[in-house]
Image (cartoon, rainbow, N blue to C red; front, side, top):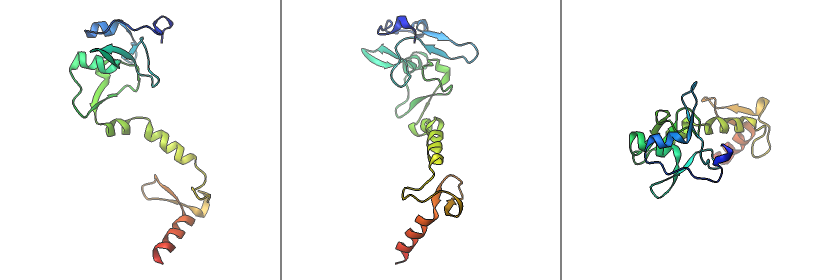
Length: 151
């Protein structure tokens, strides 16, 4: 965010051209990086229709129309402060989450675990990997669960 924009709002956009006045085009990737206020999640913010809205949604509305009900905008470029409408696609929350970083982050967090919640190691003969190759399980806990089911 440029220092001169901190704490100031640009004029409310009425056209996509006015949105472009507050963005920086990045030639090699095609992103239009918002140079106005940015929220804590990295998305641009601007005044629109009497309130404050994320800048990429305003740009999409001005260029392509309203986002269909039940959908949200996915940044195909993965740059949160990009307002290029061509980089935005309306998708369901589920699709947006699947495409995003959350699955990779969650997988990394799970793989970093060395022990099950009961303290048994995820290693050697005690490690069981499901056929989907995603879920790891503790054989000790599996045996204890199976004993409880049989009795």
